[in-house]
Image (cartoon, rainbow, N blue to C red):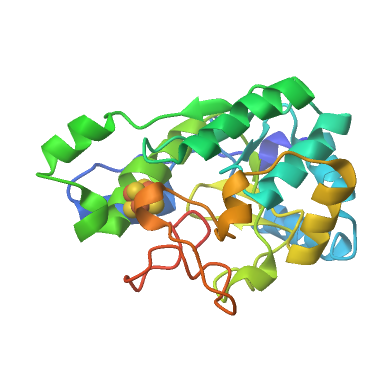
Length: 269
Ligand code: SF4
């Protein structure tokens, strides 16, 4: 069932871009859907009830709910991590036409980009690569050098968050592959919830899964995965902001090492 027309607003105001700080604020009011969904009280209550009901459901059942309820305005973003690969595997079984995209910052590892081809060969699914307005060379020239070195929040905002906002335009819901046990930020992730930042319903089918469950599924079904995981990189992001981790380190310790930053901003409220 798609959201009732009464759950959709006629128009929400777009804000003017005035400064980096103001731009960051604006994502809180960004229009992702066209026409956008309105987080009315009744709609939010419905999502909360669905989330509660799906707490003990399998990731497959949660994805089926998402497809039944929101397709064709249901999409998924993937960075080709192990969790994302398991969701792609599941979607390939019952909803292979779900649009899936990657935020192609221009800084991804070749091994990550190669996974796109492996997904295509294995499942016949073409992951759409969504790029920022500027190439890496243009972006760095514009800012007098690599922004990830001085202001990674700015860099993630420009090369990921802005791109997601555009990529998800026209959609009502998106799936993320986060797990609650990955970090403190992710602990509170709802199975189904309202994503204030992108003004979309956010669905997290793997919220209750563990790393072990993800890897069990990958092994059982020979799901393609990034070879960097076998070389000490449990979490793979852009190459300038990812290092391998030592035994005993947190699985996300290799991301933005040396900065207080732990998330790119896609999954923080
Ligand atoms: S992860 Fe690093 S290189 Fe990638 S967008 Fe964020 S700051 Fe930039």
